[in-house]
Structures are given as structure tokens and as C-alpha cells.
Image 1 (cartoon, helix red, strand yellow):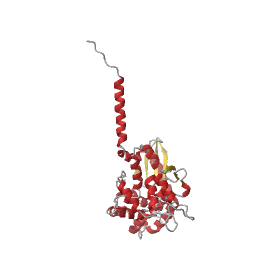
Image 2: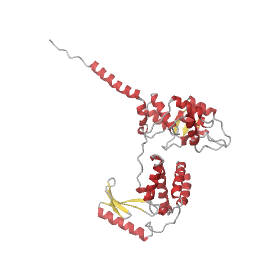
Image 3: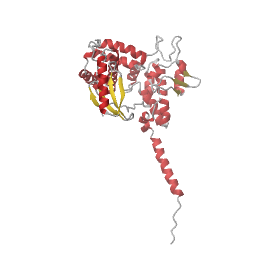
Image 4: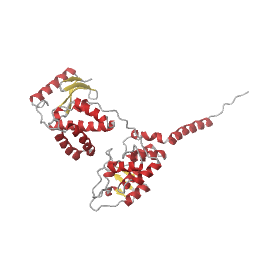
Length: 353
């Protein structure tokens, strides 16, 4: 159990089998140092470390450079574009965060302010959306501490909403036909590939012709969310969509807009198509659920679905298990067959009368 000391704590590390000191420096970096077998020794060591930090003027209590939230948000976006694959999500989050905090000094944003923002956003947005924005804000403060613009991270004390990540929305056959019929000429190939490969929208938008092998009917996903590349086979529908897709002389991307620039997002076109087709509660990411759901209902085993989706563990694919009842039935039927076989082999008891 941790014992708190201002700006740090001491606790017993079971793997090290030793007491440790735990504290953060002014740059926001956490230090966990081995102290020994005595709690008293660890406490003394922590106090000595904190005193040394204070003497060196690095306690984090020194003046910080006052910055407006909007200024730090702009710096954070430069960092995100250079270092994060999810920078587009951060850009959207910061757009909403800046509306609330833009003119405020970063150091004046309190835990209460963050709680009020959380409650305000929850009125019009789903818990997952609000959580993504809070996660972005939390990381912004972490970087701001490192950059010398803040001392504390108020978001650390704000609890996120509970999310239901087991959503499975797939299209009925007539819905799928209507969606493809009502989507724009530019969206249709992308949508067809999405529904027949299960690729994430980010993976599709980043796809270049160098990643596509039409002869071998395969797509190579190099930059997957799991951190590992994978090859996804193309069925007849996906292959036909890619074969009909024109190529731009100056753009290596498979999917590009009228100006010859790679698509940054297909959300607006996708939502327009759904509205025209009369389809509700269906998001771009649900194309991936539709792909996996159809595989499960066709009798494909979960591990194969996992490999096609690029999931790290089978647990992430388990949400589709209820869509393949024939496999469950086959499993219990095999048990029944095994039981019948054993009973058939068992010799009958002879009773002498």
C-alpha cells in the first residue's frame, strides 16, 4: 500500500522485493527507485530526493510560462502530427476543447472545469466521444508539464465514463444493396472494399497502389493498429472495385478526391449515403463489423476472423461468437456423438439366470 508524502510516495514493490520511492520531476517524468528493505529508509530517501530537487530549483513549484490553452493546443497539434497516427482524432477533439478553454490560461484550468466540460459534452455526445476528448486533454497537459507550461494535470483526477465497446451493427442484405446504390461515385469503390475486407477506415484512406497486389488478389496493411502488418485477401467484389478505380498520375493513394488529393475523411459522404438510403445507426467503422458478422454467420471460425481483422487476441473477436450458432451446435453434437460411441463400445453386462 502506498504511503503518500507531498510530491511523492513510498511503497513495497513485490517483484523487486524492496521498498521503492515514487515521484515526478518538474518535467512530468515519473521515477521509481529501489530504496531497500526498510520503509523508514525509503521514506528518508524520498525526503532527501525531494529536498535535492527543491535545492536545484526543479521541484515544479517554480514559475511556469503562462500560455493560453489555444496556444498550447496549437503546439500539441504539431507534436501529434509528427508522432501520432491518431492525430486526426486529436484535431477534432481539440476543436471542441478550444471552444471551451481557448482563451483561458492553461494553469487556470481546474479539476472542476474539466468536470463541467465532461458533463456539458455528455448532454449531446456519447460517452466514448467525451472520453476521447478527455484523453486528448489529459495527454496535452502531460506534454505541457514537460514543456514547462503547467505544474499539474487536472484531468488525472477526472473519472471517465463507462463505455460499451461490444456494439455489433451489421447491414441486412437489402440495406447493403441500398447503401451501395445511393452512395456517390467516389465513395462506392471505397465502401465496397471496406465491406469486403474489414479494413479500418484509416487503413483504407492510407492505402496506396504499392500496397495492392491485384494479380495475387491481396492487400498488404503495413501500418496496422496492432503494430503488426497483415495481408488481407480480396474477394470478387473487392477486386472488381479496385480494378475499376482510376489512378492519379500525381497521387499514389488508391482513394483520392476530385482535386487529386488523398481522402482525409469519408464521413460526410458516408453519412449522406446512409441518409439517402434510409439507413440509421450505421457508422463508417460498422463496415468492419458488417464484414466480420457476415463471416461468422457464414460459418467461418473465430480465429480466422481474428486474423483477417488484425486483432491481437481472440477476446477482441469474441463479440461475433453469438452470430455463429451452428458452431456451438456442432460442438455439442460432437460431444453427443463421442458419448454415444463410448456407450456403444462398452460391453453389455451378462446376467446369468
